[in-house]
Length: 254
Length: 64
Image 1 (cartoon, rainbow over the protein chains, first blue to last red):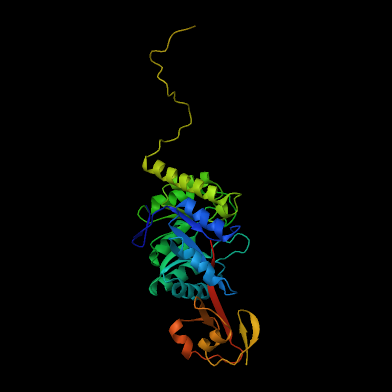
Image 2 (spheres, rainbow over the protein chains, first blue to last red):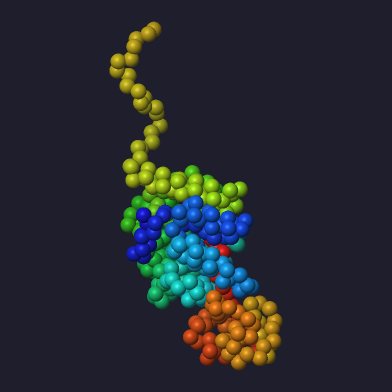
C-alpha cells in the first residue's frame, strides 16, 4: 500500500468529498470504496462546517485538505495555514491554479508555494503536470510525493498522456506518484495503476455517478487489479500475432 | 465600525478578532484571516479589529 511522508495508508484510492447527492450517499461511497484518504477544503463558514466535520471524522479516514481555487502563492500558503490549524494535519494538497478553463496548475507558482510550505513544516502533495523538469523541481522544493493530472479536473477523460506518466514513473522510481484528476471510469484508474502509479485521487467520477457507492466499489476493484497487474510484470505488446495454442501436433486435415 | 466579513459589509463593536467571532455567532471549528493574513487561534484575542478590515472565517467543507 502507498506510503506518504512515512504514513502507510490502507488503500491506493484517495477519494474526494464534494458533489455527492447527499452526505449519507457520500458516507456510503466511502464505506464501499475502502478509501484511506479523503480530500476536503476550506470555505467561508455559512453554518454546516461542524456538521460536515463530524461526518468526515466518522469515516475513519485520513484527511487531506486542499487549496482548491487558489490562484496565487499567497492565497495558497495562507489557505494551507488555515487548513493545518483546522484539520490538525501537516498534509496539504497544494493546488495553485493557472488557467480558468482547464484548471491547469500554475507550476511556477506551485514550486514557490511548495518551497515555502515545506520550510514551514508542511507535507506537500502538489497537484502538478507530468512535466519531468517541473516534477524534479517540486522534489527539490521538498515534496516527497507528486500528483500529476490525468486530464483536467472533473473532465472524466482519463489519462491524456500515458507516455508522459510512464516517463515520470521511470524518471522517479522511488517517489510516490498519484494520478490526481481526470479519471472518469474504472478502466482509467486501472490504467494509472498498471503504469506503476502508487495511488489514484478522484472525486467527480464517483460523486456524479448514478450510483456513487457502486462506482466507488468499482473504482477500488480496478485500482487493486491495476496494481496487481503492475506487480505481475505484464507482457510486452507486439504488432504481429503469436499463436497461443501450440502448432506442433495439430491434425493434418486438408 | 464597518468591516467586511466573508465578503459582506458588516457593522461591529468587537475590539478583537476573538470578540468578533463571538459577536457574530461562529462556532469553534473555524479558521481566520485578517486582511489576507492567517490569524492562528492563540492570536485572535490580541488581534484588533479596525475600520475597513477584511475578515475571513472559514470552516471544513467538501473538496476534491
